[in-house]
Image (cartoon, rainbow over all chains, first blue to last red):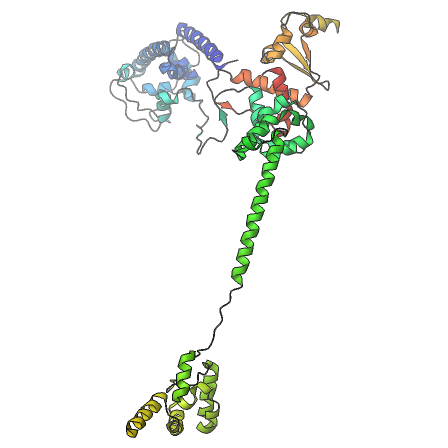
Length: 393
Length: 109
């Protein structure tokens, strides 16, 4: 049953119903009781039935206004027309026996209509209530419910059920076209090739071929291990794989071997080369690590040393003392006096050999000044020699 | 049984019977079954086959869980072909996919 079919049925049914309604002698009582006027009015904007519906509604409106005018005339206009339209319990009860009784009689039976009715929202009615229905620029002053019906967007909504609003994107996956079962199953197989690797395949090669074309070489190998019969036919597949991985393989392939064997061989060769290169690199890295820097003490070069000995200005190249030793010496001197402390001064600092070292205390320098005087500095010795040589001349 | 076979031998009965390898019988409407080209040929063939006479087709290679999915596909196809609405996805479990592929290949659908 297609949607179009139902639409057609709906149309014929409704148009038939409309024709029936047309023929009925409508009264205000019937209209208010059944609310049929409202329902027909909802169809006013329908593409095919709109015209008919509008006609019928117009006719009823006229009728209703005429009848209520008659009513108003009878009761001196106490009740307003809109009140009559509402299916109020009291009115319905009284007017139930339909159009056979004249309205005047019915009115006599009914109680006097009260001025205050339950419709609170309704504003003051204009002076010409008759024209209110026929006017085209009728401003809806009725409650919003009626306004909904006149709104074309609301046509077709079922009353009582709230309109559903969804936020967010549509979750269900939709397709554009119905695909063949073969294609659908093929897609799913391709997505799940892995699961086929571990068991025997119940198929012939030809059926499965498109899926196999999309396998990785490892998967293809595994599938072939499980299904020997596929090997016979899979040569073209291996050819594509081989050429993709090794573009030059076309030349390297032997006559007797199949593409699969060719591929395996080339893979093996590649692995070998990789291993060799990585071994080389490892070796080179090792040698680099054996270089160690050594710190050596300051040694006077050979020629300078000779000159020093000749001149008598040998300078002792003592090792640079550790900071710890220096600190110990200073403490010694501070606590125990210069004499004992002097012994613990590292050799480099003693005698003031390389000039006054900044770490020696003033006391030690002054106490060793006398000692230093006897042992002259290099420059002093040279100067003395010069003087002597001058004096000799 | 004689009565039912008489009914079945009517030229264009509304329902056809598909029998799987393990004996499950699927009654589906003829218009759905002829989605498959193979079944259509079987049922409307030159008239010498038993399928044609009884309006039933025996599939000796297709297991029942696969044939069931095939019937679902027939309904899906007929329902959504030339439909203006959105077409939902036809889901296939991966376990069935392989056998379904073979069946679809055989049935040409």
